[in-house]
Length: 203
Image (cartoon, rainbow, N blue to C red; front, side, top):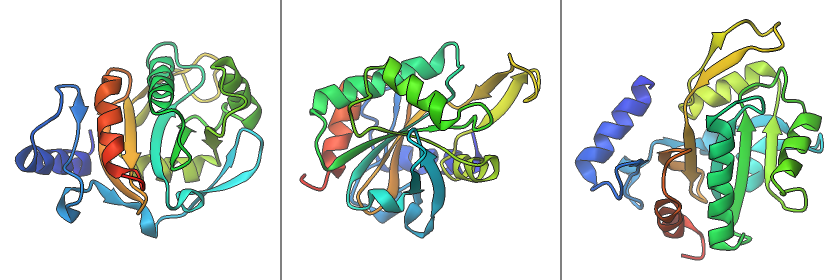
């Protein structure tokens, strides 16, 4: 857990009542309660179709549900993706909400691999974006979004290396402010949906 994440969490615990033991949430509508403001950020990435996507600029005006994975993850990442999919089904995929998955393993997770992963979850005909980029850009983005990534076995030259990483889903409001971080694989969809409703443009 980064120092910035710890500081934000402590501030939120003092300012708000947690809506659930598994969610790390803040009160919306208060500048002091946001975790970060991404309006000054611009990260050039590519999606599963090798189309350039600028994050978060290309999603301006939408509420963002952002998850972080690597496609070879044996346990947590599939649960993060499944939880996000349940949330998308719950809110009926509205146009004012963008679902985004970003890999923190750009060395292996090419657009082609992300496209196969996306299709394996039955998302091939949706506008859900799966994003990758050059390693330096991804590293900077993960740091900005409080996602810790560390090799736990092998090296990036090995075929079977494993990554220890933060289990996280984030909610970003239409003004590109990061307002919520959650335990991505374990936070109940009801909590995610309730908090998402508070930041949607139509709310």
